[in-house]
Amino acid sequence: MRPDPSPAHAGAVSVVVIGHDDAAHVADAVRSALGQGPAVREVVAVDDCSTDGSAELLERLAAAEPRLRVVRLPVNSGGCGTPRNTGLDAAVAPYVMFLDSDDVLPPGAVDALLAAARETDAQVTGGLCVRRELPSGREVPWEPALYASPAVLARPADRPRLVRDTLSVNKLYATDFLRAHGIRFPDGRFPYEDMVFTARVWSAAPRVALVPDRVYVWHVRRAARRLSISLDRAGVDNWRARTHACRTAHAILLDAGEKGLARAVRAKFLDHDLRMYVRELPLRDEAYRRAWWAHTRDHLAEYDAADRSGDPASPGTLLARVLLASPGPRDLPRLRDLAARPARLCPPYARTADGTPCWSAELPEVTLETLPERPVRLLPLAVDAELRARTRLLRLRLHELYGAVGRAGPVDAEVEWRHRDRAGLVLRRTVPLRPAADGAWTAVTPVPLERLATLAAGAWDLRLRLRFRDGASRTVSAHALAGPGLLRPRAVPSARHGLILTRPYATHGGALALRLTAGAQGAGRILAGRLRRWLP
Image (tube, rainbow, N blue to C red; front, side, top):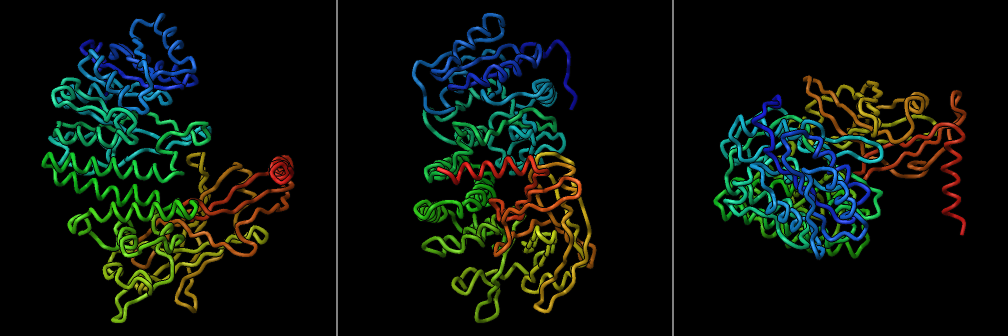
């Protein structure tokens, strides 16, 4: 939807920017809001009692910019909710939106949202947020399916998938709507406050407009000294806070009579939150795993039969069933693969005494009777990948899955190496899949190390597009096999580069990836770093 440049839009929006001890970034956030043009009446910068000079920096900016107002909290609130509420209370424009001090609004964001809000008489207007990984600059869209095309919804219940977009910052709100319904963020230290605020918004049944425009850039700084709440997941308290926010959001919607949206919150928990944390379980220590497992079982025990009445073999539901059936942590590598995107159900494949597919011989009560009936595009196909840098060969093995793969008839695999930080940089090669004596399908293909290293150093992810006899296809990742000679760095001679240092590794989701550094200088830097770690 094109922004409306008419003067009627001037001064219609207040942008609330919040921050604490973020002098390195807050000025960029404020400038991105002021740079939206005349539609922004004011930027309300709420400093949460910073001690790093942030407030003084904001005051200097405000001295030269009449649209910038600075509010400083006398005591640190401990969270994001109180400063946002303070900014909302101070806002004077008909519409309001929120911006964190370490993020930015892309050019045209406010105009795009405001034009849609005015044209459709929407009380809430949302647009596309992108997560920008820094320093690489790689961008990943957040919930892109919601914002693929313009839409107007009479009420949120008309599109339950809205509950999956729990962000508060990629939306424009009618200020009077928020105030009339008393919609505020949880005060004080309340991690994942966005989930609760957004549930309160949807519970008030606003008219909603969606636009495909990019309206928010979420900066992801994984190497930051102080990680954001969503990245700081090493402690089990983070998981407890997340489940508490999900439980609170569910209760808000249920109390408002929005049973469909409340059920969608729980479905989102299984498909998104649970899968994300399960992928990381193998990285945690035993104390974390046991505490996480016990807490998750207690949380899932609150779900009723209707919450689990969908496909019992879908990845999130199957993870929940295994957790509820197991008193303590078990099958972590296999659960990690099932939690991956795309999901992989790796061997062993067991059956009950009457022949029904099940999770394992130890958990025959977790049955998979619907799994073989799923179309091939929805099957959690498992492909093992064995990469030996010395021979420059990639060996693939597609496992049978209770007869479903054989019925589909595998034909070939398009092997794709995709650079993680440079969008569009891809190498592809198609190889035939051949039946093996044990019922699997296999393929062998050279790894184009020279070509990959010439195109770009860094991480390359492996993706496979499997094609079947009836024309169906399925994109999957490949399970990284570990063993002697596998997943270890090697210096490979190169006619062009002299040396290519290769490091195959498993991602958090267990998929095979490859990191390359070309040339003796690059290899020397890595070896020097290792020596520094080894030497006292």
